Image (cartoon, one colour):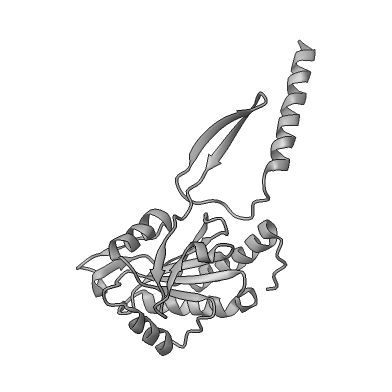
Length: 222
């Protein structure tokens, strides 16, 4: 009996060691509803947790260029949802996004900022360009997107996990959260932050650097 227990313990250790070696170092948690997938290879059973990825998308940017998610592959994304005529949370959120963009200029080749308009009928590229100019925003690695309204709202709610929808009772006619979303190179959401709060945005800056350091081996300065 003792021999059987000892053998079982050794097998558990071996499986644990193998799993640990195969698991990528994880700097941050994964967000979203996940699925469990069971598999077996050479008699060894494995359990994988499958998290949702941001699906492919395509938008016009502020320069009337079509930008696809595939063209931004290989970068970490920082995204939010806004509209230019928003009188409430958008001005402080965009101000914080601008501050974060400045704080991370040393990472310009690694990070892509993106702001999705939830009022694309108003926010055509020319309107976005005027908004960028009026707010003194540098767009070296920052796209402002306009596209199908329903798809954008769905993309925000279902995939970036931030609320965005029409609401005649809300200021400006749209209700949305102030979430800033951190997405890794593989398209997984790794963090959601209050984009109007300096403390939260500073945490996003720290988490971004942690993600690049630990999971992608990029030595970031802070």
